Image (cartoon, rainbow over all chains, first blue to last red; front, side, top):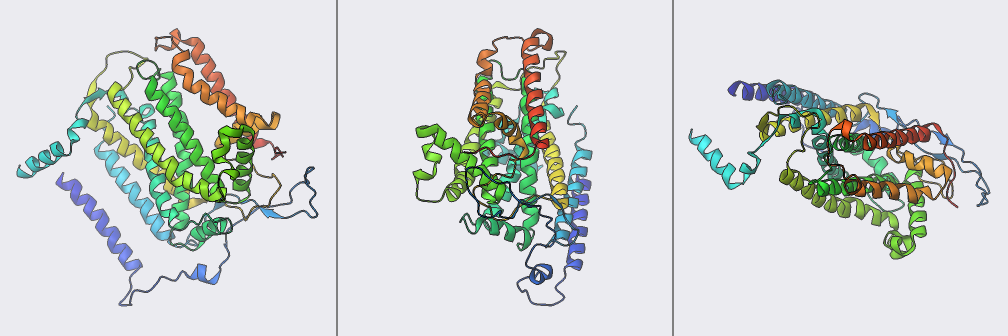
Length: 110
Length: 337
C-alpha cells in the first residue's frame, strides 16, 4: 500500500515539476494569458469547412443560391490549439492512473 | 489501527456499509459493466457541460459564434468541447450495447420490469439531450434539426404545443437550452437514481448460461467500474485531442442540406421513404420497448427456449443498423413542406 502511494506521488511529482519547468513564470507577474496564435489569427486556422451550394427548393423562390458552411471533422493540428500540451498531459495522466489501477485490481473480474 | 477505526466510523456514519453486499462474479465481466460505462460518460458530460455553459450564449445571433469562441479562444475550450462531443458518441454506443445485453440476458423480465422501464425512459432522455445539443450549435445541422422538431410539434397539435414556437415569446433556441441544461438533467438524475435503486433492490439478474455461481463483494464491482470508467475517459480524451467535432457556420433558412447525427440516421432513412415516419418510427420503437416486458411473458431466460424473441430482436437490430448505413451513404434530401 505504501509503495502504491509512493508511486502515485512520484508520478504526480515528476509531472508537476516538468509542467513547472515548461510553463515557468521566471519571476514575471501574473497577467492574463495571451494566446499568440489566437491573438494573431482571429479566424480558425484549421477548419476545412465544406462549402455547399444548396439545391433549389420548389416551395420557396430563392433569388440567389446562398453559399453555406456545414462543417466537418478535422484532425487537430498538434500544438496549434491553446493548452494542447496540458490536454496531452491530462491524457497521459489518465493512461498512468488507468495502468496502475488495472495492474493492482487485475483480479477484480475473477 | 486507530486510523482504521476512524475510517470504519466514517464509513458507518456515511452509510457506506450499504455497498457491503455480495453479487455474482459474472457481474464483473465487461458485458455487465456497459451500464457503468454509460454512467461514467454521463458524469463526464455533466462536468464538461457545466464548463461549456460558462461560455455558451443561447441568443440566436451569438450561439454559433460562442461555440466558435469556445473552440478557438477559450483556454482548453476545444478540448472540453471535444470531450463533451465524444462522450455523447461513446455513451450512445455503450447504452445501445447495454440494452442489447439486457435483452439477451432477459434482465427485463419479472421482477425487473420497472428497472427496464426506467432504462427506456432514460434512453429517451438521452435522445432529448442529443437532439437539443445538436440544435444548440446553431449551425446548419442544428437549424435543420430544429425545423424538423417544429414540424413534428405542429403535426402533434395540442400534444406538442409546449415545445412549439407559439408557446412563448422567448426564442425556441433559448428554451431548448434550458431544457438541455436543466429539465433533462434533473429528470435524468432522478430516473438514474430510480434505475440504480431498482438494480440494488432486485439484484443482478440470473445468468442465462447457468452453472455454479461464485459470489463476490460489491466493492470489486466498484473497482471494475472505476477501471472501465478511466478507460472510457482515456478513449474520449484521445479522440478529443486528435479529432475536432464538426461545427458549421451560421445557418441559412429554408433549405435542407445536412443529415442528422448518426444515432438519428435510422429515422432519417425512413423519413426519406415517408416523411411522417419522423413521428411514427420513434413512437413505435418507444412503445415496443415500453411494452416488451409485458408482451414477452415467456419466463425462461435460456436462449434455446426463447428463440422467437431472440430472432425478432436480432432482425430489429439488423434493421436499425441497415437504416443507419443507408442514411450514411444516401445524399441529403429535402423533407419538410
